[in-house]
Length: 423
Ligand code: HAM
Image (cartoon, rainbow, N blue to C red; front, side, top):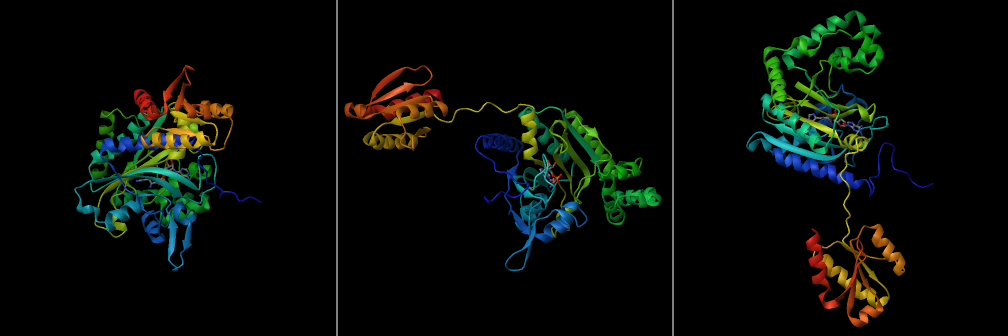
């Protein structure tokens, strides 16, 4: 039996890869405009990085990591997300020595052993941004504006930005106490996972998808109820900056992210049209993470978006720009001699940066002309034995059907000038 790709992975084939390029290029442009620089970290890291960074009690660490022992018996993990790696690089490569804040972005594959379904993969791609070394509400607002701006440039509509503040360790302790009190008598009604969360990470109970747990936690105190003065004023500031920048958002006090490192601002962006997996972006502030993984105390904030989900939204909303034909000319050669001459001519034209192709299967004139049409070529450059004898090249404009003869020694010059006129 033929070997199949692993469950939850995809082959990104020609035909759709152009949509990926379009999205990736738009992302690069936005990042450049906002002064973010690219970072590329390894696809696998020491398992401990994610255990300490993402958190031992999270679903990601408990159930979803691709972890293996390498040949030196070291535990390694395919990265399930990018933030912990970027913070590790910040410490290891001493990026804190640069002028602050350090503003970075990344794009690439992430791996989570989840139950595959529409919009949820085991290998998926994220575009993410991390800003390290700045604790001002201005930074929170800037990264959310970047997300908003990217979606505007892509032409997406119907987006909902959900915002919350999960507070700092001080107000979190107060919230934990209140939540414990609230749930004390109803604890036994919670699902098994939530009963475990009750001791180790009760905040996550508010995020449980089990309808029964949702009913039990209705009316439970939220982190917004217990924010300390500092966190409250930080959050109010972020909201007013976003309003001033024209970003529409919803404050959602039940928004709890699935990773443990968040402090203060947490946010998600949803698009209902793409189905159950509607979160296309998630992020927030993580002021304790760099220290947690052994670096100097450093505030941080960022987000990541699932590119498969952004592409799904673009598809549903029909927002892809029309693909431009990639080919300028098809070299149509007939006979061995003309083929040799034609091959040399094609290479000379390619050397000048002109997209030219020729038939590689020894097909008939008719089949070659058909291929030229199919590929969207503007010109066919026709060279048969007879043309070769007369040292001419036939230049057929495939739009108008007009055909001219060009002396072979002048062919490169003539085709080049036509190409330049079209560019
Ligand atoms: P996350 O919410 O786990 O956050 O993932 C961010 C986004 O990645 C999600 O909103 C979703 O669009 C996409 N995503 C996650 N899992 C899958 C999957 N299995 N299949 C397809 N798409 C998926 C983080 O990863 C944090 N590192 C974000 C962050 C950066 N926070 C601060 N800085």
